[in-house]
Length: 291
Image 1 (spheres, rainbow, N blue to C red):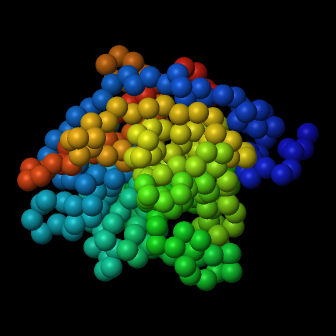
Image 2 (cartoon, helix red, strand yellow):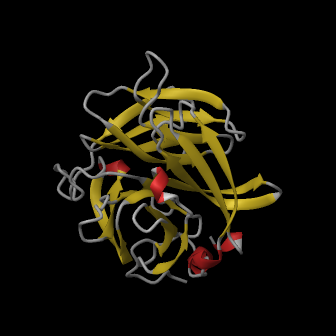
């Protein structure tokens, strides 16, 4: 049977398409645990998180170790022990945002100027790319705003959005770029509900896009089939203590305090003059197979 046309993105099989229509029920997601980590190199201005089959990866905008680059990607064990560091010392880039893993590479959103950094998980090879419009010119539709990026496993495209300041209209679209066509803009996904202060994003296996908002302090779930809003779950934040909602990733089989969790979010606790802390929050989904 042919998959119906008119969808923004679709999987390669009808059975996968049917799984994508299941409701992941974000309102029923439950925070199972959180890990507090203080005053480490990777917790300082921590912006994003992703993983491969063995490690966690976190992006950081400042490394307090003398002589080390300000920005970088940290590789940590499952127990959050440092296992490697890739310094981002490219001239001009002043901000690294949320990150994503796909096919052996870490992709990182960069700003000032905007761009994409990729590095393999062994930290042995890397490169840079500039997002382009549909004609192959710069700037891309996002301009200079590039807070997060994520690869849609259905089509291999890289997605991102503008940040969306609190005093500006909500962001209602996500842009897709083709890494195999020099990161040219190829499609736009309209969101069923707009967001402000978007800090992180990732895709689930069943075709949902998860976005974090530091404006409403929550996780929002969208269908990548058509951008329909599937619901939200709140994130506990102490706004008076300088806490910010940052990056997000999906990783099944993570067990903390005897409970499995699938969705994982970075909450940054900005401290001064001491180093920043991170609350790594873990959420369980009622039916993980629907995620």
